[in-house]
Image (cartoon, rainbow, N blue to C red; front, top):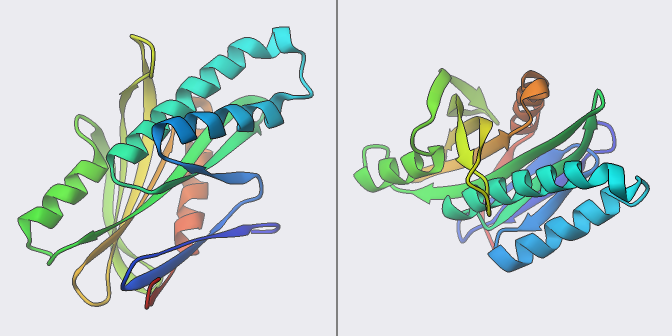
Length: 206
């Protein structure tokens, strides 16, 4: 990906990195810090647009990003990588969260953690097994609805999860992508697959 940047993380045992497209940013998942980061991101992205025309779009995108940030926080991610911009003139938000879960493949605790990351109540529309970074992985696409922070409404969501088995057999790295921008969901799922394909996973952490 031309102009891409590297997002990386580490635990005690593993280091990972992904290539993100230009204009993706990293947001903290803590509630207050996340809200502040979203507000600043929207300020930068919309500074050149007329305030009266952009206000409804800004409110919508703020609600979308807060919803995705809350979901990442509940799943145990420490950071959220996000894109905010226009695709074919449509305001788009997309996110990527990375979580590491520990346990043997048949460990009920691991299975429960992965189920939490996947979310409850979503409909699975695709599920298959394919390699990524030379490692076996489960790819699962889901659709569902998420509550909007500060509102009684809900947003239709498209989620793509890659569950990548750790080489030591002791758990999995979970890449969770999401968008609430239905008109370009297919294009974004294709992009999410490209990002997942850039994964580098190495032993030795922080």
